[in-house]
Length: 446
Image 1 (cartoon, rainbow, N blue to C red):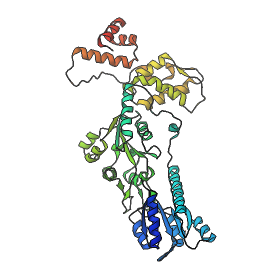
Image 2: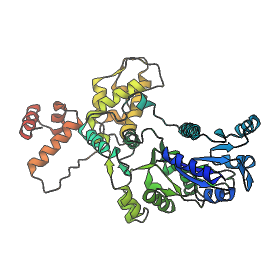
Image 3: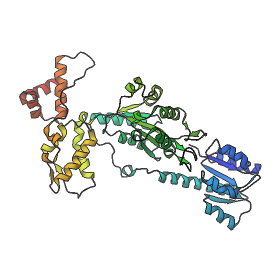
Image 4: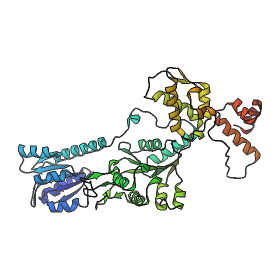
């Protein structure tokens, strides 16, 4: 997005030359010939940089600098260049200093250097958390068909600026999917800003998201930019979006539809340059029916949906996930720990209601309990894991009236996945011989 600059210069000829040159180098620029005109412009806009002549017809620019610098970065220009003026301007925090007559080439260098510094400061203000990406580490671990389908959707939508809704149970890794969308997008050089919507009350959430102006409420003694501005050129991830209160939902809808927002207590319409990725583990359609979620916001969010499968539907990834957690834990002395066959069988047959998060906690607990042993054994796992499956009953769904053979094939397929293809265990659960299992596998092409 083009940078927006304001030039405050009473010399109309010089101001016109500066404006044309700034537009030539790819910036959006406006001119104000007095402080009164500048104030009027600043009441409705927020430029990325201000170039100001310190000698204005209706004000002393040097006296205005502290007030102006509290909200905007400034480069000063003056015909009365002196070391004293330069030092004074630098002390109050200006980006740079230009002496008149202004060289357009020099001005171009000064402006580009100032914009680069401003961008760098913004990046450091919000932790980018990109260490994993820079080290080439995968965020989503596994090679199951279910996870490959998620990667396929990510690859299709990442290059666009479309709003994305990520659905899935708690603990499946929705934030990691959002980060992967960000890392594969053209916005990967910008910030990834995550907001946990369920931990912030309505009033605080609005001020955190959109920021607030000085005097907006008791204790607001300065202007604060919100997370929308913190995610500039990047991605804003709204986790558990179903928990947002209805008044904030209306403002979020306006942000998504128009890319415009206002800070709390503000009157300016500010332009946002951020991609929205949201996530939820609740049924938003049901929330719409119950009046807890706006239907228009739901339709905007659900333009592109990525559903993250629960861990029990991609059991073949469990071994890889376990190895990853063992290799990357950072709380104990590293030894060459492996998982015994019985322990791994318990891990792969458990249904993991807490999904990947629960698996990570279980592995880390087992690492602590195994101490200096070279193997994590079944006794190092929690009682719920070793006692058997956490979820009882069978649920087979079809989009038509199934035949008996279809039911038998589907049930057998589910058991083979559940017990990692261990035919003896499947035969034991079904109460048939292992030879019968082989015949059924061959019959149904499993």
